[in-house]
Length: 193
Image (cartoon, rainbow, N blue to C red; front, side, top):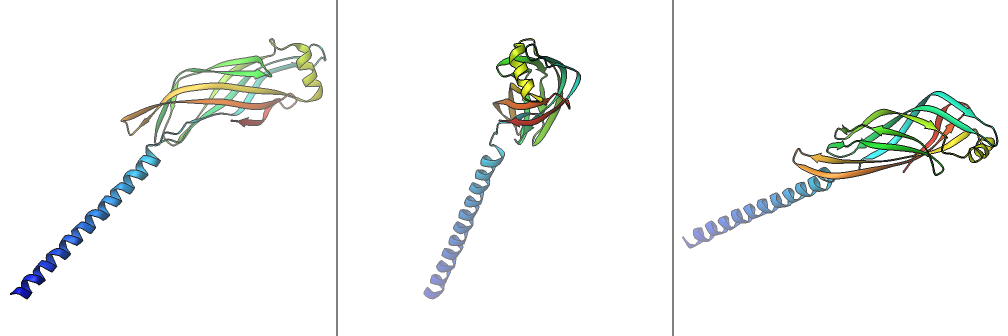
């Protein structure tokens, strides 16, 4: 009897240890799942806002040494790359184009949204004109090179919505440099930060 009682107690102890081990393994597994979920899925990343390419219409350039000028209508293809697991909805904004520190163009960016893990591409028309640039400054640039260095800057303010529950405000900045080739009438060397 005593031997059977000891064997029963030992069997119950083994069962309890087995249940404790299963419970501990389940707790570790749940903790790992929650940790991965919070670090990967719920992490809000800043979307990337870039100039991709452009086409030009009615390009006019005067390359006189003391009185140079240019004017054109540029159709810039912009993109918003959203790497989040939720959509990014942004407000109206403005993109400005500069030659050195002289503003040469401005365009409106309509509000929109980029779906989760996707890139939204859209085109905006920008009227570029060198009326604010002194002719001799531009003339020295055009006499040395066959291109005009431009910079485009903009800020998009918006919200990332995760799992249809959580909303986080995120702003993204565009600061792109590029060269407008006056002979081929194309953008080249586009670089964005």
